[in-house]
Image 1 (cartoon, rainbow, N blue to C red):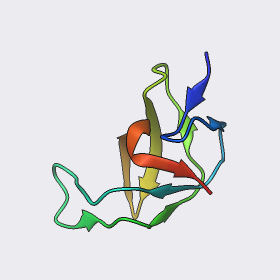
Image 2 (tube, rainbow, N blue to C red; image 1 turned 90 degrees about the vertical axis):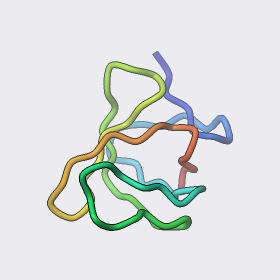
Image 3 (cartoon, rainbow, N blue to C red; image 1 turned 60 degrees about the vertical axis):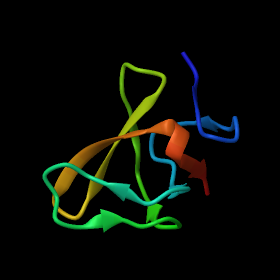
Length: 69
């Protein structure tokens, strides 16, 4: 199973990604802004989702809003 970002690049565990859109996250008071770099992503069982840490929280992001750095 290959996990791809919004541009079609293959993502792997430990990659860094940029956000391509401002995202409101349920349960968090802050919004993730476009252009933020998220480091050390982890792949999940789904080809459309990755798991990452933002601050002290672990969240799941859809790959359609990510671009490989």
